[in-house]
Length: 619
Ligand SMILES: Nc1ncnc2c1ncn2[C@@H]1O[C@H](COP(=O)(O)OP(=O)(O)O)[C@@H](O)[C@H]1O
Ligand SMILES: [Mg+2]
Image 1 (tube, rainbow, N blue to C red):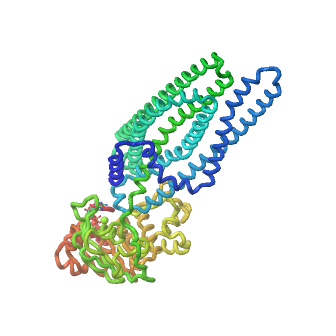
Image 2 (cartoon, rainbow, N blue to C red; image 1 turned 45 degrees about the vertical axis):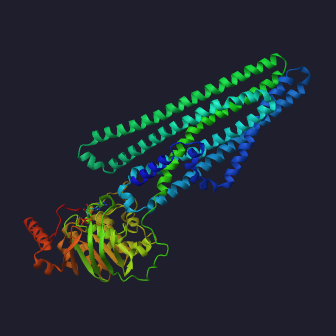
Image 3 (cartoon, helix red, strand yellow; image 1 turned 180 degrees about the vertical axis):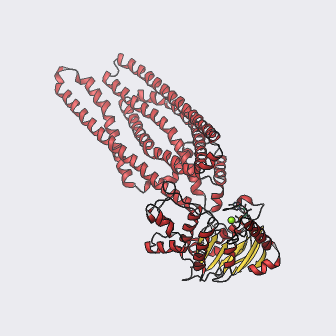
């Protein structure tokens, strides 16, 4: 996640000293999310005001009871006071419940919106980002970090606001009750607040560390669960578990350090606050003894002071939660700040009603961002006429799949240009470009959907008839019908697992259904056995007619279908021609072909000669 780490580094270098406003700054991008729900915010504020007001009348009522209540002649007043207190309690209950409801749902709402936006953003990022990103870490941003934010926007914001209101209200009432005592009490506030703010930074750093460690552990777990068979086959469970335990353990230690810090901050706050209250109370007691103020007034003041002090204490404990949320927000903001490199130009060339399917590579050079020193394609030039069938042949790592990746504009070329019907790919909206191309990849992905939905992936509007027709042409219909629920059988993690050959045939059906003018097949038949391959080969022959197709092939049957063969080696074209001319030329193609023929003959497989397949299904 190099881009994100870089952004982190910049952020912390620019902010050697964080203050109140700066700590909250990462939360600012979230404000628009909250402001969408102005009505909820207003209702929450109204409830908040009402609840605080109700709480603040209680001490005055207590004073009335103490100063007038306990004498026989004012029994009526006592009843009135007690009645008022019940009314206040009812108001308080109702207002608190509404405040809780509105603020919490606001938090849930904001986080739900943010999660959806974040996921949408992730789907727009390009291949270069995902070459280095760890999906586990991204998932942790999407779930754990957004949950942290929910607590900030929900409970913490609710508690913080209530206590801020209470604090201000209590201070005002303290001054109204006894300006002298209030002044004394306020003098103690800087002593309380300054250390809290200072310690906030430490808590923040520690909880960010805890959160990062957890994201790494999640990434590690995700990687291993995705490859659970490889892990078990290699007998690596014990080592994997031990590594995960270490990761979880260090996440625990980081969280423990953050919590310890928080605990100390809370203890310090309580101690200082209540010592100050007791000191002021003692001074007040002297005044009561000297007859300068009534005992009811002192009680009222003390109650206000306790209200004010406890809201300050609660504010401090919420503060560390808010700082943790700010950390989460800045990590999310870092991801949202990553701009995809492959985007539509501001004025994309509109696609024609029907693409002819002419492809040209002109002096294309390209190196993957993660392997800049080793170019995958070097000064590659070729062009393919509409409707032509071209086979790409070459040893593993020659750059065949890279040609497809560039055609689909998963990356931009470093030098040169690629054009479809004479239009530079960079002038097109990637969506339009990719709609013009159907790809059956080397290692097809099957999603946790039904068979029919898998074939119609990206084409939700496809009819059942069209899906079945595509499956039939890809020779997939028979095995699909044999599944327990036919086309409605669930595939993927929670469903049926398909063999490599079955997955390839579904991918071919997907490409057939796409009915695009350009068809790319990346060794799409490598995992099929001889009989199935012959059938699929017939299907492909049928599909390829009338559209431009490029087939990465290592089986002779596929190559023989092609109008032209391009032989790649180390990112360059080394030979070009037909099977007959290339075999006669005695170059790389002839060597690859001979090598394969001999192997196949030894295994008695002449019927379906394989051109080049040193590593079996994939390369
Ligand atoms: N995502 C990637 N990141 C970095 N290097 C890659 C990536 N994909 C392929 N390569 C490298 O680029 C070269 C060409 O790969 P590829 O086009 O997949 O070869 P082929 O399909 O002909 O076997 C190889 O050296 C391979 O290691
Ligand atoms: Mg490949």
